[in-house]
Amino acid sequence: MPNTHKLVLERPFQLQNLPTDGKQFHPNRDDAETEFKALRNEFVDLQERLYAEDKQKLLIVFQAMDAGGKDGAIRNVLKGVNPQGVRVQSFKAPSKEDLAHDFLWRIHKVVPARGMIGVFNRSHYEDVLVVRVHNMVPESVWRPRYAQINQFEKLLHDTGTRILKFYLHISAAEQKARFQARLDDPEKHWKFSLEDLEKRKFWPDYMAAYEEMLHECTTEWAPWYVIPANQKWYRNLAVMRTIVHTLREMNPQFPAGVDNLHGVVIE
Ligand code: ATP
Ligand code: MG
Image 1 (cartoon, rainbow, N blue to C red):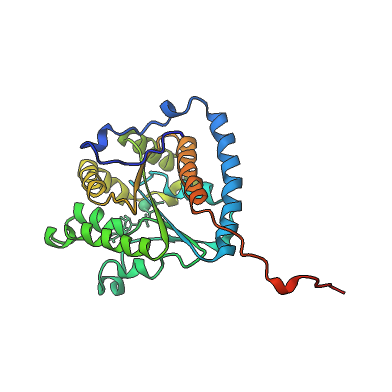
Image 2: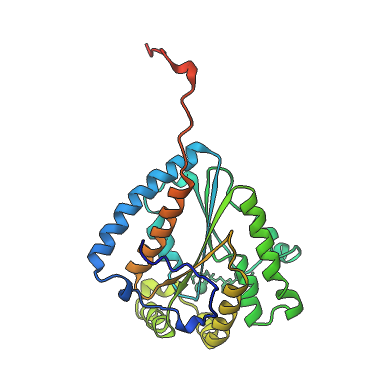
């Protein structure tokens, strides 16, 4: 079994010591892309079964720094999957209505239903990341959220949802290169905002917030995977391996044939 980058808390870890570079885990890009495509075909097949079975649910959470590759990972991984069985949800800054409720309100409304795969582009974790780094609420409000999140994810787990959480880990240098590429290409300007540069100034604070969040919210029922994400081809493969491995374990089955179809003739 290749390294899945599943976070284990046996030893204390520092995010800066976890790899951002995928090349050391895979010698050859072409081979990685071939494996990725084969796994994607299997994913398409497993997703169809999950949908037809209509019993289990899968929730996939993506978190990353700006330009960390959430959009690219989602686009590549979901290519070819039946859109009816998947719901991608992006979480931007909360609305006034969202803020009038508890922080999980807008999240809980859109968790996957039976037979569905839900994909979160950002998530409830923003409420212990951006919110913490920029002091949007006091510590007395955000700190209890680790336990609240764990309980919330336990509820989802106990009611038939498998949860996978991916942190796409890029280096500060890689973020700089990606921002520069966005600046240099007019067709990428829409992906760039000056706010991104403001947030970049807080890189160490974000790393500290991610690190503590990963410590506090790694549970048996909702593991984190810290994916080396400087190379997009390796990031895609590592994410896909974990999703397919999980779906194999879930082992969805087409429903048994309806017996009154036996002997039916279509004239
Ligand atoms: P891209 O990565 O492609 O730029 P994005 O997810 O950054 O996409 P944007 O519209 O650029 O999308 O930014 C959304 C912003 O909303 C992010 O800065 C994120 O931190 C912020 N946000 C998300 N959830 C919350 C939250 N609960 N509280 C405050 N800000 C939030
Ligand atoms: Mg952005």
